[in-house]
Length: 148
Image (cartoon, rainbow, N blue to C red; front, side, top):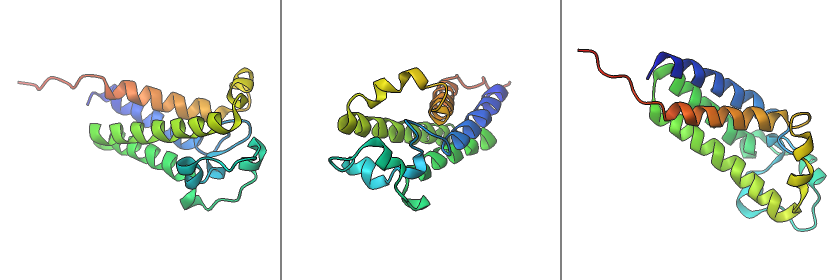
């Protein structure tokens, strides 16, 4: 990979890792979302604040997926592995996409209501999605030509 790709992937991996500890929607952090909720959906009758009030072990939360994604992107930055970068980007985007799909399915307009505050109280969303989008662009950069 090109040198600037390594540097940008390193920054993206750090951004995704830091973003996984911050709020991603209406005060909900990835550490508050159970993997079962991503798989099965949130229980009927819940409000968004109940998701933020859950106590979830680290290894059973959405944070493990985002941190795994960040680690894969960091490995790609250090060792130049395009496969690791693609795996990190796909895992991160799928986990965030599933979360937002489940939230939209259960709570309807909560995402639209939080658009106006996306740059103030959802810093984790901005860092995580920004890092994943930029890492995706870096995966699409062509390889260097072999020197003769």
